[in-house]
Amino acid sequence: MKLDAQRILIYGVCGSGKTTFARQLSERTGISWTAVDDIAWRPGWVSTSNEQQVAEVTTICAGERWILDSAYAKWADVPLARVELIVGLDYPRWFSLARLLRRTFTRVVDKQKICNGNVETWRQTFSRDSILLWHFRSFTNKRRRMRAWRDAAVAGGPAVILFPSARDTERWLATIDGV
Image (cartoon, rainbow, N blue to C red; front, side, top):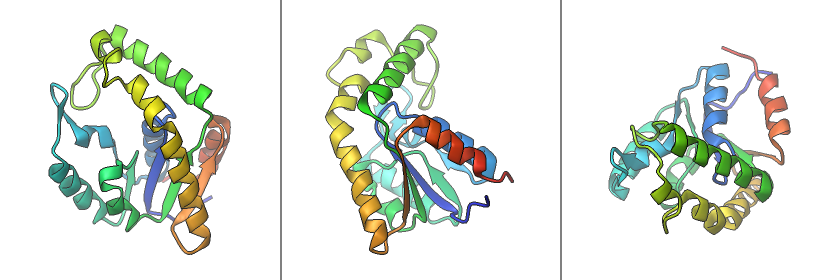
């Protein structure tokens, strides 16, 4: 199947696999993708200012072909104004949490570099700013947002596909014709 959409937003809860899926979709379609966490975090886990994030996302979304692996609420309106397809990874909490736990602990042990060379630490994992806590804080709102976008698609919003399982996502990806 040839994918008609050229401006794509991947969305889901922490641990759902947005970045991996965005990379795989980019490889199949030839559409460049951006890891949003690379926009949000500079080396040393220094947060990029909201203004700088908006400027970078605005530049990306001005293009005719792009894939974003998420949209932070503070600037989600920028990609939503131009997106043609939203792919929601609407997996159960137990599934995304298990993935997040496995990924986080692996990164802490392996010291895998992410987000502009940053590494996750045990201290960070168990802090007030933990990605694990963020999963619990954001899960319901992110699911609600995906489902609202799906409902709005019926009323003329961008097309939305919600996948309830990773297996469904993988099957769909396999149907996309490569470049």
